[in-house]
Length: 317
Image 1 (tube, rainbow, N blue to C red):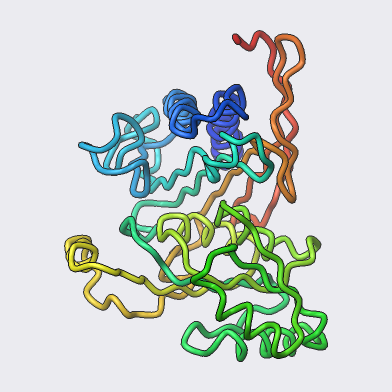
Image 2 (tube, rainbow, N blue to C red; image 1 turned 135 degrees about the horizontal axis):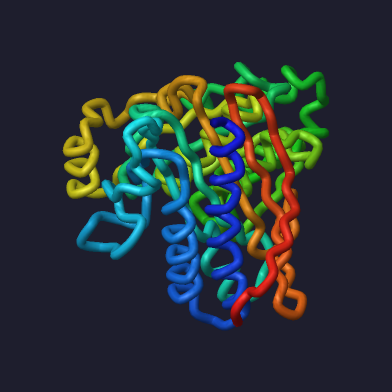
């Protein structure tokens, strides 16, 4: 069954990536996202699960497909009930502009596994396996950088901090500069960025910043599969957002969400397919009527990370 899950989930992100990749550089991020949603939704139909989307494209009245609460999969009685979290395009603006670092991602776990994160901002901090236990979102960025470097056995001047290039993160950059740590910034795509911390060979030691809460849960599934560590804290800015938290059963809005709060248990799966080239995956390559995709699939229960190169023929333009 695990083999069916892994291949099935890979097909889901591959379908999204292929549909979206046809629109790379065409200037319409909504069209690229819509194409990915269509592909992902179609591919879910053959998954051997009884799945429910808990993080998706929005509520029922906001999204025609992959909306929160939508049922996906074959839904046969002997199949497991699963929580599904989707981001058909992580980096829609990147795809529209023909830039790198656009991926299609899905996280999946048994029912009740994934935090039902409201669509708002969330503070996030993440590290790979080597620095597990060193981070504390209640401490300052500087303290977390110093503690991470210590846990990794590095001089803090050898530490690389990854964050999104936004004015709200200037205080993190200033903290890194004061202690001599290296800073690497990215424009868009929280999930791919956080994943680079878990894939320790890529040279990123710690991710710090504020971004989308749904993307935080998806990234947490990947970080857990990779043996890393992550902490988050919701950051509502309006009364409406506070009420949304309460409606979803989140009573303590300031609670520090550990990795096990974000993603419970061991039956966790994650898949990412490159739409355009990113740090750890090549993008979709079209050759005549073929599409070549590059996918990373992870399964926490058996501690595996697989890289799959797939060639599909008879791709319609």
